[in-house]
Image 1 (cartoon, rainbow, N blue to C red):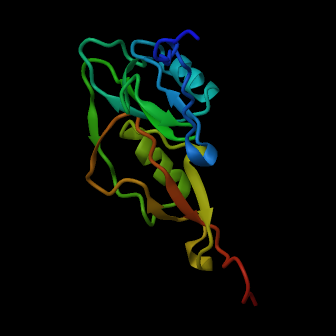
Image 2: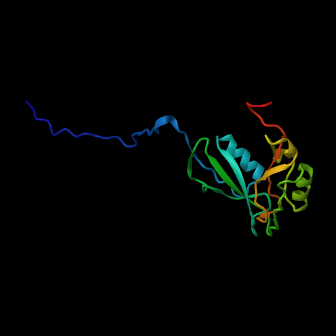
Image 3: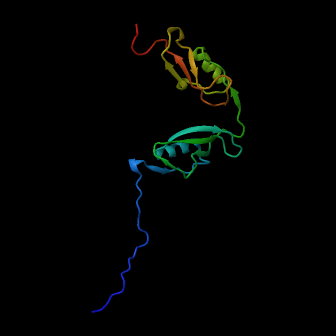
Length: 171
């Protein structure tokens, strides 16, 4: 009989190894949206399953309302449904203004004072909360403290008393 040589095991190149992350979290590679218009960048990030928040920063080099960058940075692996902050240019010079104290004022007066200082405060920034009857229509809370220096164009949210206690125990 004839003798055979030793058996050699051959591993073919390019075996596919599949990596499954448990609990089904889908990781997304964050695209680079720098220098895109902020609205386009927001839409493109939302379309791949991310939540988007915006933060204004002054920039000498990036056009106003265009994206400077993201937090976390481009090419980071982020899980689907997580929040990405878009850093958006506010233009080369940022004007800051001191936030007035509007707590205790009527809603219309409060909105007017904030707008005069260059802040955004429209009906969509107003929340109505339960309050004592004498606090009806008055501002009970504002999202920035009095005297805080914020970039003009920042949204200032306010809570206004509805004048009625909500929930059980009425009457």
